[in-house]
Length: 230
Ligand SMILES: C[S@@+](CC[C@H](N)C(=O)[O-])C[C@H]1O[C@@H](n2cnc3c(N)ncnc32)[C@H](O)[C@@H]1O
Image 1 (tube, protein in one colour):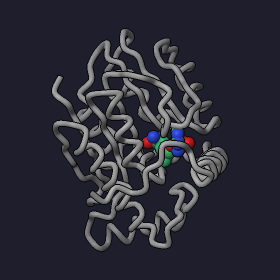
Image 2 (spheres, rainbow, N blue to C red; image 1 turned 180 degrees about the horizontal axis):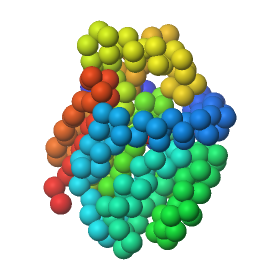
Image 3 (cartoon, rainbow, N blue to C red; image 1 turned 60 degrees about the vertical axis):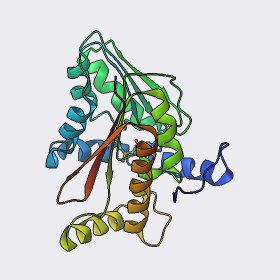
Image 4 (cartoon, rainbow, N blue to C red; image 1 turned 30 degrees about the vertical axis):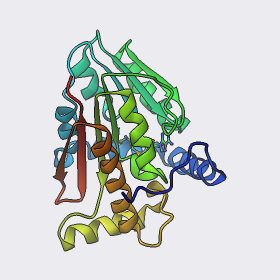
């Protein structure tokens, strides 16, 4: 197995990485919110995550790295008023935007936790969702393993250069235009995305009974869904 460097306690490098993420996502929260909502239906990625989660009324779901809350309306739709959603993010301005959305809609069963998703603040749930988050972690393998102990369904969406030449070139250009949002520390941004997305999938393979991968947006977005039999 080629799992990247594991660690049990946060290292100086991790702390620095979290600070960088908070700084860039904090600064760009408003623009990100607009962009994410404008593209929410693009390619069917978010709808694909929802159906892979396979959740229903009364379920409890944790969304790690919820950002400004783009997935929350669909999650709330599925779990209904009797379910529970815990939205976790490390960046306060992102959480504030997500909270404002929930207040506007008057939902009572969505709670927010400002915390580092690499050391989950919640012990158990029916399902875990993380869209465009795990490739920000230096060690996604270890983090996704931890999440797999929390729930029997874990669904992850990530960018990965698995499309044709033109699609990969477009993805590369996107990473170059907005490097802080990808937290690019590697010289080859596509290679880093690919390695981190693959590491997340490997963790699901090692912890879950089944793992299904579906590709979207000309092969540049992978949704990996890990399930354990209920
Ligand atoms: C690309 S945005 C994705 C937001 C949302 N999931 C979406 O699909 O639009 C990444 C989010 O992950 C959050 N994030 C990054 N590292 C995190 C960490 N270690 N713990 C919790 N949240 C984190 C960022 O603050 C940001 O809101």
